[in-house]
Image 1 (cartoon, rainbow, N blue to C red):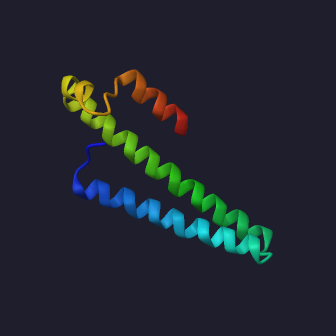
Image 2 (cartoon, rainbow, N blue to C red):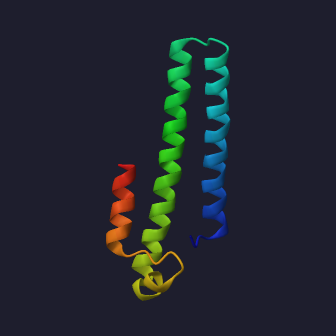
Length: 91
């Protein structure tokens, strides 16, 4: 996945935030946390992961649009059809 440093930093921050939220969910379940709190945190984890996934696919899509020939020959080798499938996996 080719991304600029700022985009990669943002994606990593989202993923790390999701990891922290997931740790909180696990702890809450282990300690008998309130259902409302557990579900709220779980929804936050899900949202953070979705946002990170969309950012990754969006970056790949931008690269594909900017230079389709290069994008097709990159290590990932993502075609527009494959990008569409990845996007729909997140939807």
